[in-house]
Image (cartoon, rainbow, N blue to C red; front, side, top):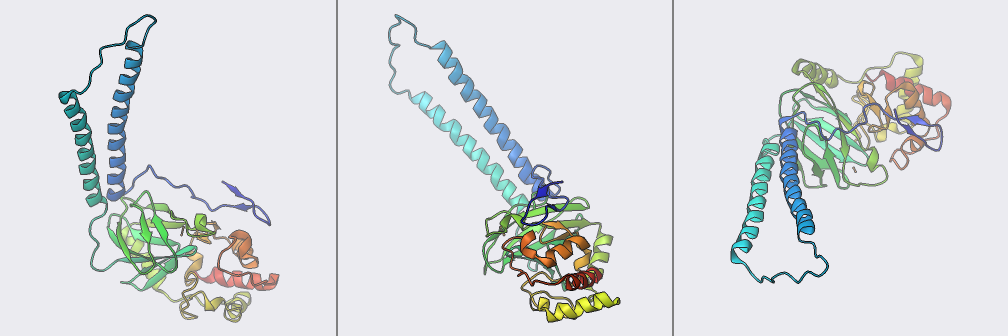
Length: 323
Ligand code: CUA
C-alpha cells in the first residue's frame, strides 16, 4: 500500500495500482511482447559480437613500446560489401517482424464499435452503443471476445494504455481512433493515460474488468437499469441536495439528469474506485471527496462546494444507494 500526502490527511491509494507491462494477457499484447523479446535477443547478440570484437582488438592489437606502425590499408571492396549487407539484412528482418506484429496487434476496426471510450480531463467515459450503457473509469468486457473500441477525446490529447491487453492509442479530439480490446481470462487490468494532458494526468487511471461471458451479460443488464430510488431519509435528502447543489449540471444519473461534463453516476456505487483511480470507493473516501475534491485530486474540474458535514453525509448516503 502506498501513501500520498496531501494538504490534509494522508490518503491510502487505491488498490491494484500496479501497471504490468511485461505480463501480456491477450493475443494482441502477446504479439507486442514477443516482438520485444525477439528484438532484444537480436540486438543483444549484435551487442555481444561487436563488444567482444572491440575488446579482442584492443587487447590483441595494442601498441607496444618500440613497435612500428602496422601496414596501412585503404579500401577493401569485399569487407565493405559485407558490412553494408549484414546491417541491411538485420534492418529488413526487424522491419518484417515489426510489420507482422502491427498486423497481429492492430487489425482493421469493425464497422461499428462495441465500445466507445472518451478521454476527459481527467477521467474516462465508456459507452456501449449496443446496450446504451454509459459508465466511467471502470469498464467491463467479456473474456475471450475481441471488442472493437473507438477512442475519442472531449478536450485535449490523452493516451489509452492497458499494457496487459493492447497497444497504446492516442485519443485525439475530433479524430476517432480504433483498436481491439481482448483478454484471455477474467481479471481486472489497470490502464493509464500515457500522454501528458495537464495537472492530473498521472491520476487518469481506468480499470478493465474482464468477466466470463455470463457475468458480463449480467453486469450489462444491471447497468441498463435506471438508478435506484433512495428510501432512507438521509439518502432522500441527499438526492434533493444532488439536484439543488448543481451536482446534476455535470453528472448524469439515469432518471435524474443527463449532463456529460462529469462521470455518469447512475451505478456509481458498483465501481471499485473513485476519482479515476485515486482512492478506493468507500463511504469514508466519498465523504472526503465531497468535503474537498481538490484535496484528493488537486486541479480536478470538480469545484469545492464547501458543503457542511450534514450535507456531505446526506450526499454520501445517496451516492451509496447507486448500486
Ligand atoms: Cu489524459 Cu494524460
